[in-house]
Image 1 (cartoon, chains in turn red, orange):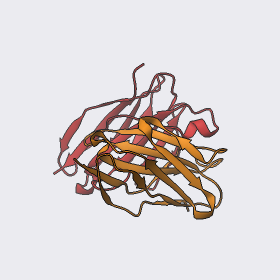
Image 2 (cartoon, one colour; image 1 turned 90 degrees about the vertical axis):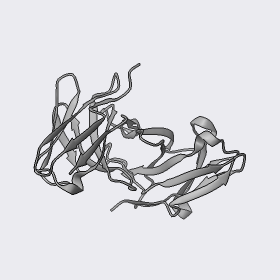
Image 3 (cartoon, chains in turn yellow, green; image 1 turned 90 degrees about the horizontal axis):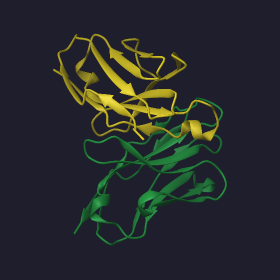
Image 4 (tube, chains in turn yellow, brown; image 1 turned 135 degrees about the horizontal axis):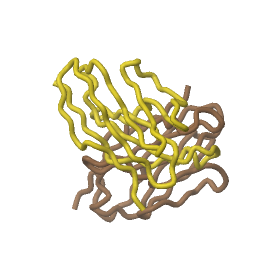
Length: 116
Length: 115
């Protein structure tokens, strides 16, 4: 049973550039959430996708956008990169059917983004 | 607004000693509660969860946690720590009936294990 997978593992970008990160959810899951984890901090919720639409959004600027495909995989796009965007970006998946189990999220290994 | 506090940034214990990691939350009702572990360079692995019912929950790798409503706490415990337990531990809460799947995390507690 494949877990959550993310690509790439590491990425180095220059300030002002744009980046796309990819995520495939755990088999059987239809909801994908993205989190940003800065060094020494806990993960912070960016947004969540369900049925190919953004269902919730955390306190992140519009430079952060996403997409979910019919096969439930997802992309996170960040435009106009800032030095402060350097972080580990985590993708998590769960079933979006409601109830407590919809909060039980399974995380991928993350993509380490460095902005120089 | 919900929040999670993990008061201890770094804890060092000897191998074989007992462990307790503290977690306090702020929320108007009983939230859903989780403990995750993160090894260096890795994603987060779910250790255990609390939704309702028995306030003592068992998880993987010999961990357990106790929900105490009066103290707004959900502390993680292990009776005997192994060297492989060295990692960072995160407590997280979710708001029932509200933002499904939006977990609020604490800042984490880094656990070091002395031989």
